[in-house]
Image 1 (cartoon, rainbow, N blue to C red):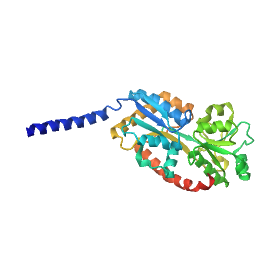
Image 2: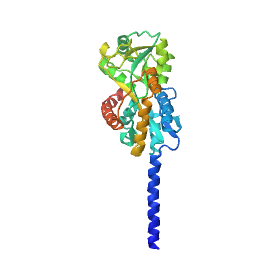
Image 3: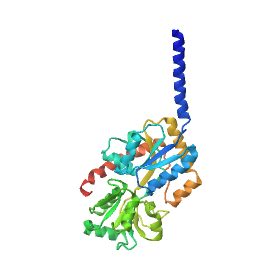
Image 4: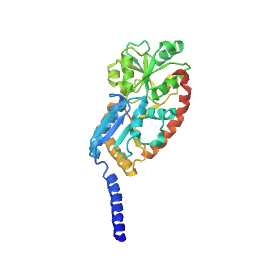
Length: 319
């Protein structure tokens, strides 16, 4: 009788282990959820929705996209941490994620997530309306030096990538300005067009149509050399400011997600990036690939977080 019980227990244990292995091996066998921390229509939102479309084809499961806006992504990140680490819940990640973690005001760190190689890399730019009196970066900087409280400048997020670019410009040009934050890059564009901002610091993809139509004029771009997408726009460097920065966009999952699930997601993303449709999407939106492995992306993010802490300590007086 005792032997029979032991045999039955062993069979149950083996079945349980096999079931768990099969569960991970068959990933995904149900719909996947993408959560993004920005407003609908923002460049990150567009990337997530486009990725969801093509990744769904690769993985054979529908992918829904939810917008959970607030706290520069903190709300969406916290939402993922409250869900199982099984690869069925994926959250957006950007350079602003690094700033958020570096700020140290949340109860999570980069170790709570697994970052996938950034799918997009894009510079920042200084933009004004077509009727702006500022036709060059030098003219805008002169006005900011003279009356920083009378020239309104803003963009996406407090203590994020675009404010960092503005902070670096202030450092290099020798003035202190006021930053007006918005919940999405497209909201900063609307504020600029509506006359509520004199200038915005933004990614060009936030206002491609308005740039092409001439309603928005770019005064400077943060690439090392002139951008292939905006060759007529001078860089910060050629205007005397050694400012070269790019924002990345990607996805992440909760730490503890099984390695085989992470590998399957990573391989599916590589397959998406090889698609002609994805490459066309990237070109149409002025984006460049980052081409980092999952392992290298972890180090990239950790290093970036360390490098942003100095900026975050310095901006308290100018927020």
